[in-house]
Length: 299
Image 1 (tube, rainbow, N blue to C red):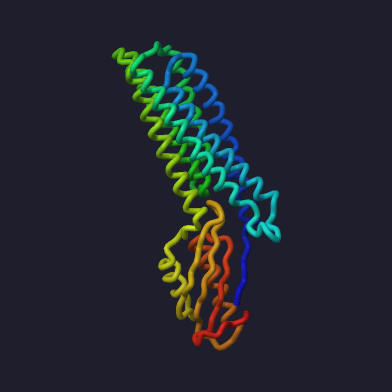
Image 2 (image 1 turned 180 degrees about the horizontal axis):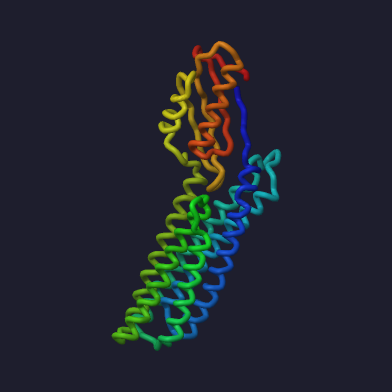
């Protein structure tokens, strides 16, 4: 027996609030990027420019995630696009991650040039802009923070914590320049932020690639163990799970059961689907029920 249980529409409705939160945080980060980039250029702080690039990456990540969700909402699955356009989120995330690499390299190069040829930094204006950026990041953290956050909100939350760290690096760098006169503190802070950005980019690229290459989000052995706990299930095998995007998981598997009626087989199939949905958060599934003798049951 085969059956596909599509909960994508319900998932979209539940995440309306999440998309609004991401859009607000996108706007906050975009404002921070503009302010820090202009400030870094005008007042000579490469660390401020580096933090601006970090905020641009986060704003782009949140914005494209929200855009991808909206595209997925408006474009339902069709005869050829059976999963709709959920993969847009993954493609845009990979593009963001890739674009961040040359940006980070440019920041490191600029920091190196500033290290060789120090330039004057407007201490107080740079510090004021960095403090404003820190305030925006902290505001975003408290806006997103809650008892329950979905995957996109958690990713945004941890990115924002990284932004807070970047802003603090700029502030400490500027203060060191002011207190000691060591101008190298500014490019050193820029390099540290660039490393943080590359680390964030690497995580996005690894996760996006794992989705594109259909890596299982859970160990099949763990799924097998949970399914075989269900009364009436003899064994579970041929387990294949993957993700269409960060929030939509898919799974197909065969379960061997020992029942004497089709009605009981149907009850077991429903228990398997409920387990996959509640324990592993899977959105779509195909469960094939087989009799103990290997004969397929049509339920």
